[in-house]
Image (cartoon, rainbow, N blue to C red; front, side):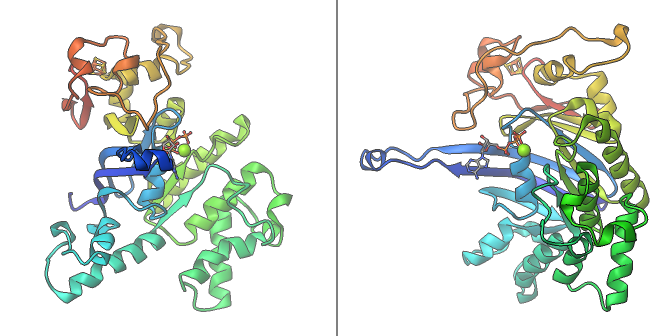
Length: 354
Ligand SMILES: Nc1ncnc2c1ncn2[C@@H]1O[C@H](COP(=O)(O)OP(=O)(O)OP(=O)(O)O)[C@@H](O)[C@H]1O
Ligand code: SF4
Ligand SMILES: [Mg+2]
């Protein structure tokens, strides 16, 4: 972790146990797991936008939920502003010694550290969900919705201060003048306006990190660009870092700095967006990019349509997990998992062909 990193994720695992029948238990069948996140590492600098891309079920939302503390990781470490959150908390609860990465180990003050880190994370890392209809309480006014995080975190000293912060957050999110929206209810707004309210509710806390999980996929195509532009403006104005989750590689060039391509719980390729898009190394990235529409016919790539079964996180293939669908699979891919290799400046991929 460098001094400028806001977030560092080290070897993160999230397995969900699969319910066993009584017969399976009697037969002492070993428990099976959905390996939603299966060894993921990445870091995020201040003000940086990292796009996480991959098809449905590859583990994107599970990473987001684990980062924000809605799920507890099975293993691995999450460092926010240099302090360990999550695993550390679990170790302490289990009476184990704190991990070395939390800083100086062994003093009573350091036992209190992870709890402080978790509290700070809840305030300084905010999540924007896919569905603006579900994320808003239908019985609250827009003012109450955006003011709620300030109340929960005890962050406004007076009513006047709270009103001023809510007004600024609404107007920064493009709901101007704020007075026209404050006393309305979510059902009185359009889908795009609702997503702006969600964004205002996240930004009112002046977070360091926004985790946006498919923030435009439920919106009308005509307003998607507006919301992405808004996120880009907010990042420029406030310096907030963003983890931008999408299954649409076409939108990442919009404002992401770096790209991580996920397949079945793992990052298979990562690097600066421009570099990965211009020189994709992993066959899966190449296949994803081949179906992204490009206006210039000369830049169009040959379409790669992936064959084989849809990946199943409860049955991860041996060797390279992409091998059953890889158009250029070799014998050794079926047996041995490839390690990450560096293919360019900050650009890595895991494939035997590199
Ligand atoms: N609470 C849970 N219990 C059991 N399995 C789960 C749970 N949450 C997610 N999964 C499984 O974990 C895997 C990853 O799911 P996740 O929702 O993280 O994928 P995703 O990449 O966000 O997909 P999508 O693009 O469809 O949103 C899937 O196989 C999913 O069924
Ligand atoms: S390691 Fe083999 S199966 Fe995996 S992506 Fe590379 S070539 Fe394809
Ligand atoms: Mg998801």
